[in-house]
Length: 123
Image (cartoon, rainbow, N blue to C red; front, side, top):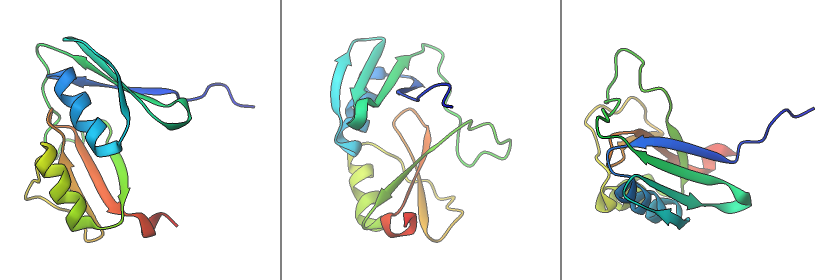
């Protein structure tokens, strides 16, 4: 028995509109709502990604020796170098600390870490 279905993930942000534009370009999802304090993307299968602006937002930081990054998104790409370059062009940061060989860690404009990995690795 399924108790609940995940329909939306909401991220704290320093600028909801900016982050929605960034993630819309990365994921190809439509911006369904964009206001000063809140924005939402509409994705496949009824999934949504939301962003809430917090005046005192503090990014989790990377690398994070305390393990307090809380979560990260893993995204599959066909070409790591091209994926990194495209994300950086859209506003991501590519930190020096890279802990693996088959994936790359980037930071979104609000500092949330996310990973790109080869689609072939997802089998």
